[in-house]
Structures are given as structure tokens and as C-alpha cells.
Image (cartoon, rainbow, N blue to C red; front, side, top):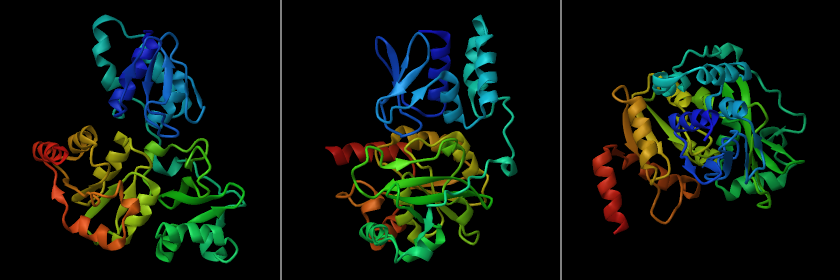
Length: 322
């Protein structure tokens, strides 16, 4: 295994990505399409390809997508690591972490995305695109969410567009296929650093004392009936995203995530405790996620959420499986 691949392997682990290894490559989750075990990186070069979305990766590109840094910063990280020798190698996790010496861009310098001309606001054009409105109705997304989150529709891509705002600026978007025919249910624009933003962060109500953390955009839209919901836009939650949560005044954090994500719960608890209290929300047993729930079921899950304790949770999960 090359030194570059060792660097990437430690970086992926540091940011919560699961990594396995075979005779020719390391295998991990693609940071673009979020498909587990689809990104293959060759052991000798660090270059690779996602077998799901067909994106080609260089080591620097992977660093950019995982950490949210610039190209220049990615090359600096790889360059600094390349110079480490012998006993210095145990410093790699700190060097590559979000707390490293890489200077982060201030929020006001974040790139603002201009929405394409054919991303039509649904609140203004709901009669023009009945297929989009019908899809949202089937997913039980209300008019309140369409207005609150500035939902749009791209007739050329046949996707519902969910903008992501930071400090009032559109920093990216996620597009949800409504046809069921696309291999990629969600698309994001090139250059959108999802790991450095949280969908819904600009809409939090300061009068409340909690945040609900969700994974997928439509889980997020459904959960928003209960206010103060943010979305990581994928199963992997980065340290930058957790830091954004940690920087808020909200004391209680409700995790509306995959119930089997033990390692992810531990990662979140490690980053947020003792400043925050963690609670687990779980959908009814016959549902795979909150995107399938109605408002009554979501409210019940919120009110019955239990405080997170790893020992109690793991033993309870084992008993449920038995």
C-alpha cells in the first residue's frame, strides 16, 4: 500500500467513513453519491472510481470532498503528510483532522450558487408543474414546507430542487428524481461541499431548545413539521457539520438517523458531549425511515425519544433482534 493511500485511509477513518481493503484497493463510501462500498481506490496510486455514480477520484479530489477544503489546501495537506517520516507518522490523524493547521474559509467567503434559470419556484408555479406537486403530495410534503424551504422544480431534470442556505446565501442544492428511473436519486452541483453545510440551519427557531438531526432531504422535509430540523444530506456526518451544531445555543439534539448506526451515534456523542444532550428518535418498526411517517407518527417519535446511552441502546437493539 502506497503512502498516499495510507494517508487517505486515515483521513477517511478520521471523518467517519467505513474502510475495507482487498488485494488491489481500499473500498469506502463515495462522498458524492453517498453509496457505501462503491468507491474503489487503488493501493498503489490512491486514484479510483465510484462504481455507482462513475465519478473518477484523484487523492486531492477525495480530500476536497471529505474535508470541504480548497484544492490548494488539499495539496498542502498531502504535501505535508508526504514529508513525515518515522515516528512522526503517528501525528497523521491530527494533521488531517478538521482541527488541523488548514485555515478554514470564513463563512462570508463561502461560494454562493446561482440557481439555473429552469429551477422554478414551486410556490409561484404550482399549476405549471402538476407532476412535481403530485410527487410532493405522495410524499406528504405540505405547502408549508414548499414555502419555508424555497422548494423548486427542474422540468429538464425531472427533479425537486431543495436549496441549502448558509447565512442567507445559497451554498448548494440537492435535486430529488421524481421519475424513479434515475440511478442517482439525488444529485448535487459540482463544487457543493455538502460536508461543510447543514440543510435547514438558517431556519432554526431560537425560541426552542432543541435540534433534530436527519440524514436524507425528504426525511428532513417530513420531520420539519416539528420545527428545528437540520439535515446532513447523507449517512456520513462530518466533523464540520457537528461543529456547526456544537456552535449553536440549542442544548438538546435529537438524532433521527438510521437506528442501526451505532458507530455514528458514538461519533456524534464524542463530538457533542458534554455540551449537548443527545436523544434518539426512532420510526415505527414497520418503517425504514422518517420519510415514510405521517405527522402523528413523527410527533410520537419526538415525544417518546430516549436519552442516548450507548450501553442501554446496544443491549436494547440486541434484544429486539432476538
